[in-house]
Image (tube, rainbow, N blue to C red):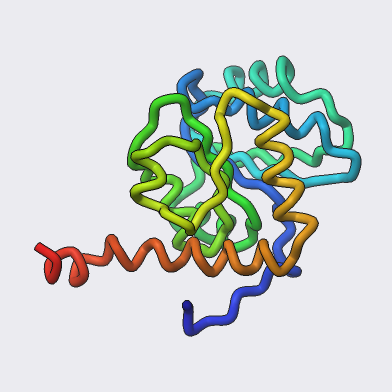
Length: 177
């Protein structure tokens, strides 16, 4: 898949969310899913949304004291990509998003992907992601839990996330067109 071997064990962020914190992005369901965790997990949230809005959403939806929350506001592109290199699983379960640049950014750094089960999303990512119904926080948690507790599967999904990018490299697009 990749010339550079992936390292899963050295990644301190179990879950990463990248993007605006708005209702349609459905971060609330991701946060609710983490309330089911029985062991400590670290969630990295990278956003340019104002801190008050983010903190309010977190207060309303995340009550599990076992979750270590790391907030990064207004990260530069370089900072964002450095942080993504240390993330295991990216969760993007938007209600209506189609092509997501932030999901591609996560994939480019080898994070396993948990995505909304929508036909358009499946057409882009194929077998390179784990799909969930964005309305069910228990299903989201199960996908996260399964990946974190099956290192071989997590590693494989991390490698597969890198492979989806080959479809969007300029030379590959130009050849197809």
